[in-house]
Image: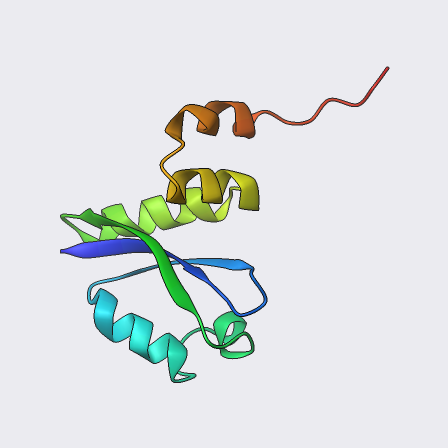
Amino acid sequence: MAYMYILECSDRSTYVGSTRNLNRRLLQHNEGWGSLYTRTRLPVRLLYFEEFESVAEAFRREKQVQGWGRAKRLALVHGRLEQLNELSRKARRPE
């Protein structure tokens, strides 16, 4: 199994990653052995995860979700899937 996960950092920002061992990776993040981004924003807490058959699939999903803004990530976390398409649209400038 492999996982894509979303963390909330102490500054309320979100971090997206992937791993084979979710529990170990969460401990690593909170012990300061995770990414440089989370290391300076401890503690972190797990908001969401998805399971995949392979690391490659989890990594592809990680890269997809990393490209999303905060609002779209939180819609996924809270199960508001109907909002994902709308949140994908770029804001139009007033004419």
